[in-house]
Image 1 (spheres, rainbow, N blue to C red):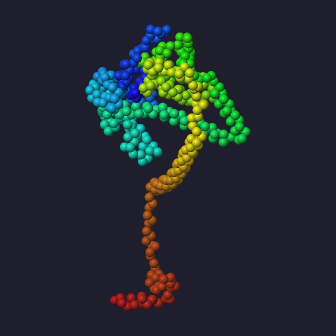
Image 2 (cartoon, rainbow, N blue to C red):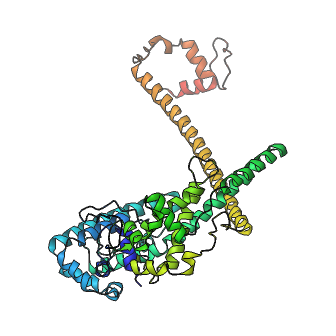
Image 3 (cartoon, one colour):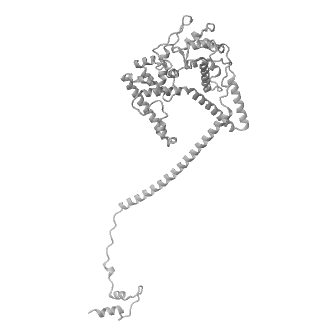
Length: 457
């Protein structure tokens, strides 16, 4: 009937919930006159620690609800509203009437959340895979708040938070199943790859060991059909320690409505299957996979919810519970098929998964080779720079050494070095040709000298 009540349970399963308080106040009372055990009411002052919703904004979601619960006016409006007011966003407009201190706290919570998202966006963009990411497009993925007004918590923010959490939690189980499916395929893929690495004899031994492990896992007591009388009576006897002949569905409901809110929620329902799961799964056994056990628990919970929860609000009230005990499936249930009886994936799906792994590995190898090439190039550049640096250091060192050497005095001029006898001077003047150093006979002068002497007065 309403997914908001389910969302609120997933958010805070052990307290009066803000969003669903208008629905929980009308829970069917339980007649305790016929009970044969004393059941103490849950202490309203105690709040057990609630589980994580699995949402990436889980903390922000919890903090907003806790702050809004402190405002008496808003709480009264929620109690008088109907589910359509919540789903349509009409109730979110009442945020304008809450106390100033509440709005101040909400503003601070939103600023902190926006700062956290900005940090995540910055980290994503800075990563090697984040090159070229559009920041505005990335912001649109955070649909649980209005990032255009980062400093104030507005009615639109409450409306967006409710709708985002409702939608995301509806898909939570599907995502869990998909993740488990990938987990199982990866496990089988790794097993097959390991077999390929063995020789024929070792491969046969490993195959035999694998089949023996599967056989040991299947060898366990019969698992009762979840939600059947046999299953509930077993909980009554072994977990509650009560006489099976005194089994009473109404008392059973009261016992396992652990928070006393008039509903058996999903957590309380899953707790009922622990005894059944312990028959097939033991953490001490190598053949038992605890991841598979939690998937089996989830399958049991979904099955009972589909069979018992008539209004599909993910919460079982007393009326729905008692009506289920009148059905044929409660008294004469079918044999429960475990994960061992229902393959999680087909061979075609496994082959497609392995192709995806192979393509991913090829892409990673290509990136690694490219990084290795870049690293080698950087190494060469580093060596070249180091060589240039050494040359420069040598030049600087030589210049420093020259500066430290004493100055050299200039040579003294030799005045006699340029004196030439008259004969040599004449010989020099008389040499018409370069390289002709042969002396003239006595009494002879060169023609140029004679002409020069004749012109002299």
